[in-house]
Amino acid sequence: MKTAISIILLIIIAGILLLISSYNTEIVQLNYLLAVQSMPLSMVLAIFLFTGFALSTIAWGYYLLKLRFNLQQRNWKINKLNQEIELLRLQLKDK
Image 1 (cartoon, rainbow, N blue to C red):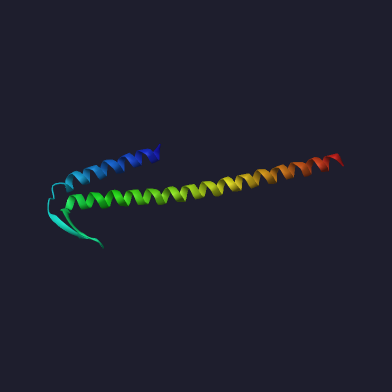
Image 2 (cartoon, rainbow, N blue to C red):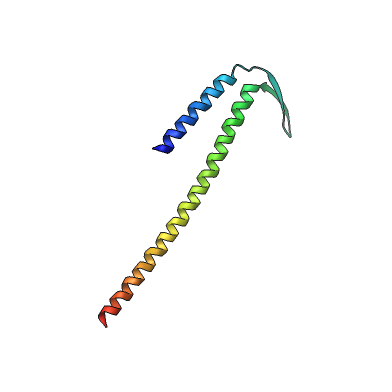
């Protein structure tokens, strides 16, 4: 719930910032490796904002998936060791 509220708050802030930056209609040139393109500064800011957000979301998602996979492997190993301990306890009780 806390994460959802923070994401919603960040989206609202990004929207407000984009609205404020839309008043800046100065034309800038972007020099790519293959081309040069002229566009309004507000458009450039919006593109880089959403590109950065998308890349950071992908990186964070990859990190979380890796952590979840490691946790699942360790839980599987713990369960396996607990079963082995129970079998050893049963063998001790039988003797």
